[in-house]
Amino acid sequence: MADVTAFNRKPTTNAAERQLRVDLAAAFRLAAHYDWHEAVANHFSLAVSPDGRQFLMNPRWKHFSRIRASDLMLLDSNDKSTMDRPDAPDLTAWSIHGRLHALLPHARCIIHLHPPYATALASLADPEIKPIDQNTARFFKRVAIDLDYGGMANTDAEGERLASSLGNRSIMMMGNHGVLVCASTVAEAFDLTYYLERACRNLILAYSTGQKLHVMSDAIAEKTALEWEADREQFHSHFAEMKAILDGKDPGYAD
Picture: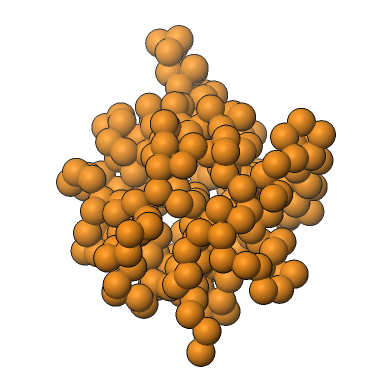
């Protein structure tokens, strides 16, 4: 069996993996464009094997705006020696993404960020995304909430706790921390993250007025959320358009 734990600049062996690398690299550049990143922290990963245990992830402490397809590490969540390597990934990245890929097959693409508005909302005693407009309604009763922050996520036990908290959902507000977004493709994970931050911005701005929120009824919020979910083609078109913009302005991501 080939060594699937090879790290940076592993030669791409097939077109499918090559496309996954390009898509994930684009997501990093776009996160930097939107100011979702935080210094050289935060991490994205993408499964390349059917069981999700083999995955691509950004190298330790490389700025999102400089990440290229060829920079992405190919890791295996079963490899216990990963953190012993000289070019090991960031410990918190391995603790979170390694465990989630091992335990949650539906989490093919995992985006972990500390974007400003979502993180602000996650810092409130009640971080629920209340359905006050079309964007916030997209997330109605579809977000896990974790209020048990215990410091840096730097152990397998913490990664396993986060996997348990997320369960079969795709989004988690990480109290006192940030957000976690999972999807079957990079395109869907990117679109979810984009609208999640927009929704949190809308809610934070509404809170800032000091006026009472006009919250939708459960029935209308659920109807709106289902309408979002029925329009999956738009999610992929959104990402394709953003990659086309990158191709014109910042094509080095695909190298």
